[in-house]
Every structure is written in structure tokens, then in C-alpha cells.
Length: 84
Image 1 (tube, helix red, strand yellow):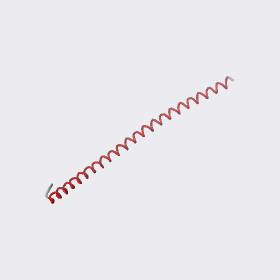
Image 2 (cartoon, one colour):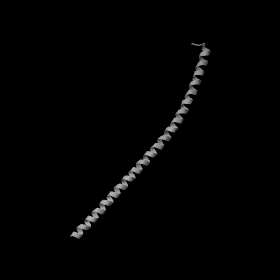
Image 3 (tube, helix red, strand yellow):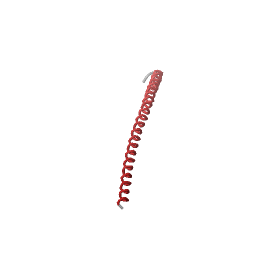
Image 4 (cartoon, helix red, strand yellow):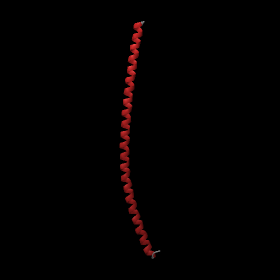
């Protein structure tokens, strides 16, 4: 019986070591995935904000051009009416 119990104990120790190694590998994998996800998210947000800023600039310039055009049209309209 002693030999059988000793073999069971060795098997149990090997199982525990394998389980600990598997947990360590899984933790490392999850940390790697988390780091990659954060890196990808940062890159995505930087790209979105860069494009958003460029689009915002274009919208701002277009709005200014439209505003100047409307002001010029209003000034010409007022001039025809003789002013307010």
C-alpha cells in the first residue's frame, strides 16, 4: 500500500504543477491579449480623432465660406432695398 500511496502522491504533485503552469500560461496569455487590445484601441482612437479633426476643419472652413457668402448676399439685398 505504501508504494501505491506514494505513486498517487507523485501523480497529485505532477497534476498540481501542471495546473499551476497552465494557470501561469493563461495569465500571461490574458495579459498579452489585454495589452494588444489596449494598443489596438489606442491606435484606432488616434486614427478616428485624426480623421475627425481633419473633417472638423473642413466643415469649419466650409461654414465660414458659406457665412461670408450669405453676408455678402444680405449686404447686396440691403443695398437694393436702400438699407434698413
